[in-house]
Length: 112
Image: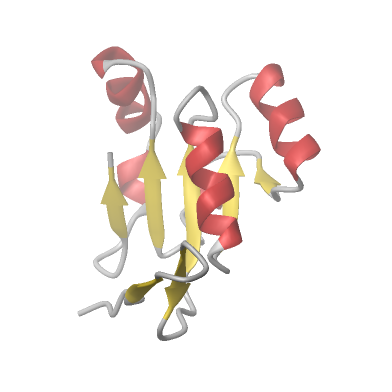
């Protein structure tokens, strides 16, 4: 079982506060309209976010925002929790056929 952080809303400050720490590294695939802003929120919440940029534009965005990048799906598997925000089913299936699933173990959590 993996314990995820519990958040509560600070009504006066209008922001979410992490009530307990998390030691997991979070991996992210897809830095488009949804991915990059979500990565920013995860980073702001104190999580260590490593990204896999699928193209040069994504790599430039990651570098600009200060996210560590990795060069392959198997490198990203060093993260315990991995999210993807890719544009369509074909892109997701492409990830799965590139050997990504083979790099994951029973302790990994993959969220699309």
